[in-house]
Image (cartoon, rainbow, N blue to C red; front, side):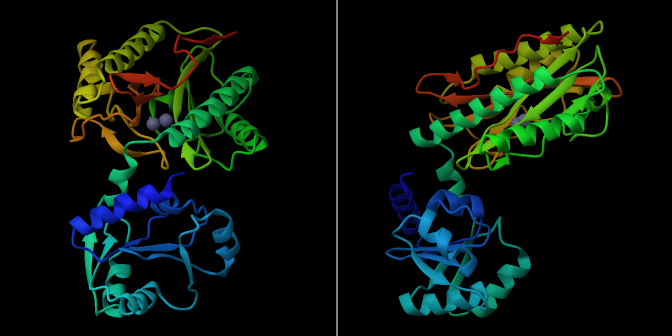
Length: 360
Ligand code: ZN
Ligand code: ZN
C-alpha cells in the first residue's frame, strides 16, 4: 500500500486547515495510514513527524506491519493527553486536530485538560474522505474478499437441506471462511428464513429451513483489511405464489439503479431510481432503508447511497446496491451486489448471477 502518498495528501490537508498535527484515534483510519491491525494505537501526523503510539503488546506487530517511516512511541501507563502534551512541547505544536466523530466527549475533555498548551481542534471526515476513492491495490483486495465470499456462499447452498437452521448456516459460514485463512467476517452473518427475512438486519436464530419462502443470506468477509458485502435471497423446494414476482421487481430495481450510476451522478439520484421503480410497483412502503453504502476498510462507509446523501459518484468509489421488499410476518427479498465506479460507468464486482435460485 502506498502509505507515503496517503501521508503526503494528509499533510497537504493539514496545512490548508492551519493544523500543526492531527491525532488519529479511529482504528480503520490508523490501518489506512499505517497498515496496523491491532486494537490499541494512536497516530500523530505532523508536518515532518510521524509518531505511532502503542503499548508493548503491539511492539512486535508494529515492526511487522506498520509503514517503517513511523517512529514508535511506547505508551502504557500515561494517558494519550499526557503523551500529546509531551510531544506538542517537543515539536512546538500549537494547533492539533482530533477526530471529533471518534473521540468520546469524556476523552476529549480529558485531553484538553492534559494538553492545555495546545489548541485542540475538532475535525470530521478528513481521512474518511481520503478513503472514498480506492486505488488499484485496494480494489484487488476487495475483489478477493468478494471472490472468497461467493465461493463460500455457493458451498452453503450445497449444504441447505431440511432441518438445517439459520444458526447452522452461520456457523458453517464462519468455519469455512476461517479455514481459508480469513481473519473475520466483515459483519455478523444475516441468515434469515421465511418471516425472519422480513427484518432487514435479522441476524440469525434457531429457525429451521422453511420451503417455499424467501431465505436471505447477507454475508461478507475481510480480506487483508478490505471488506465484501453481498446478499442473495433463495428458495428451497420451490417459491410460493407471488415471491418470484417480488424477486423480479427487486432485481429490476437493482439493475436500473446500476444502469443510472456513473461518475458525476448523485448518490441520492441512484437511490431515487430504485425507489421510484419499487414505489411504482406498489411496494414503496416495504423498502424502508437506503439503497446502499460504500465498502472498503469498513463494511459501511462513505458514500452513503440514500435519499439524504449529498455525495456524488467518482471513479474509484466502491459501493453496494441493495434494494429490498419486506412483507412483515411473511418474508423479504433483498439482492445486494458491489460496484466499482469506473471512468465512464460502474462495474459490477460480483461474479455470481442474480437469477432467482430455487434449491431442490
Ligand atoms: Zn449486506
Ligand atoms: Zn450492505
